[in-house]
Image 1 (cartoon, rainbow over the protein chains, first blue to last red):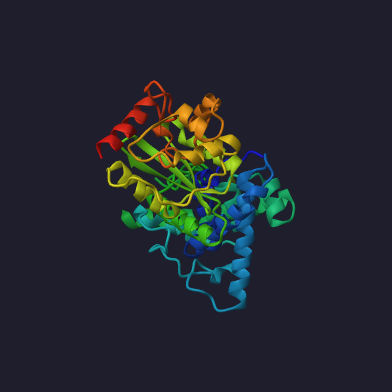
Image 2 (cartoon, helix red, strand yellow; image 1 turned 60 degrees about the vertical axis):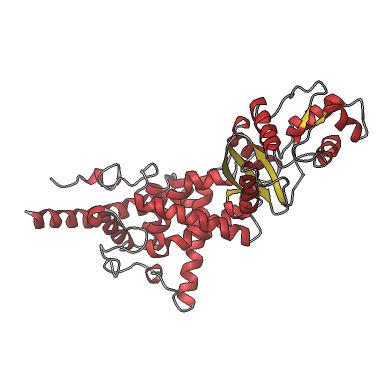
Amino acid sequence: MRREPFERVVERFGPMVLRVCSAVVGPAAAEDAWSETFLAALRGYPRLRPGSSVEAWLVTIAHRKAIDQARAAARGPVPAGGLDDLAGPAGPAGPAGPAGPAGSDGIPGGRESELWADLRALPLRQRECVAYHYLAGLPYAEIAAIVGGSAAAARRAAADGIAALRRTYLTAATTRQEGRT
Amino acid sequence: MITTPHGMLAGGPLAIGPGATATAAEERAIVRLRERLAGEAAAAGILDVAYRTVDTPVGSLLLAATPGGLVRVAYPAEDHDRVLDQLASRVSPRVLRAPARLDRAARQLEEYFAGRRTSFDVPLDMRLASGFRLAVLTRLTAIGYGTTASYAAVAAAAGRPRAVRAVGSACAANPLPVVVPCHRVIRSDGTLGGYAGGTDVKRTLLELEAAA
C-alpha cells in the first residue's frame, strides 16, 4: 500500500491542528493536545485507509484527545495549564486576557488572543463545530460523524457560534476604536 | 471603520480559516512541536524511519535510519523526496525528520569528507538490498580506503566471476553509497564507470581518499 512519509502529513496539517486545538482546549493546553494527536496519528498511520480524508482523520483524533483531557481534568488535579474551561460552557472569557497564554505571543494588538478568549466563552459544542468547519475546513456531514448528532445540528451550532463571536468581537472592536479617538 | 462581520472569519484582519497563513508565533510553536514529536515517537518505539540531511563537498546527503541502523544514504541527484517516498513504501510510512538518531553517522561523514576518517563505524540496516546484490555490497567493505578494485575482481570475489554486469547494477543500486564504498569499484581498464551520485562525485571521493 502506498502512503506518503508521515513527515509530510505533519508539514501540511500541523498548523491547522494547532489552531483547532487552541480553539477547542484553549491555547495553554493546545501544545500538549497537538503532541498527543500527532503521536497517536503516527501510531495509527500505517492502518489509515488509502483515499480517506487525512484532515478529518486528524480532527477525529484531536477530538478524542480533547475529550480524554477533559475527563482527566474533571477526575483529578488539574495539571498546569488551563483545562478548567473544558467542563462546559464557560462564563465570561475568564483568565485568558489579551496578554495571551502560550501560543499567542507576538501578535500585534493582541487581537488574536482576544479571538481565542471569545472562542473559549462559547459552549463546547459550538466551539468544536466552529473549529472543525472554519479552521479545519471539514464539511458538516463529517463534523457530525465526529461530534455526534446530525449535519444540520452541526451547521446550526457553528452558525450560533459564529453569530456569538461576531457580537463579542464587534463589540470589542468598536470599544477599541472609540478608545483611540 | 470597523471590521465587517464577514471579514472577521474569512480573510479579514484575523484571517482564520483552513488556508490561513501561519503567524510567526505559530511557526515557532510548530518547530518546537515537531522536535518534540520526533523525540516522543522514538521513545515510544514508533519512529520507523528517522532522517536528516548533512552538507558535504559533494552536495547535501540524505541519511535515513531505522532502529536497526543506517538504511539509506542518498545524493541530491537521486531526488530526496523520491527517496523518502521509497522508504515510506518499502520500509514504513512512519517517517519523520529526526536528526538525533543520525548524529553519529553525520559526524562520521563530516570526518570522512575532512580526510580524518577512513572507515565507518555505525550499525547498518541492509534491508534494501537482497540476494546477489547484498552479497556484492557485503564484499565491498573489504576494499580498503584509498584503494580500488575492478568490477570483474568483485564478481570473482563474490563467487560469480562471469557476473560483472550484475556487480555493476549492485553498485548502482547501493542503498548506502559512501558508507558502503561502491565508489572504489572501477572498470578493469582504469576508467571510473558509473555512479549514483554522478561520475564527478565518484572522482572527487577517489581523489579525496588518494590525498589523505
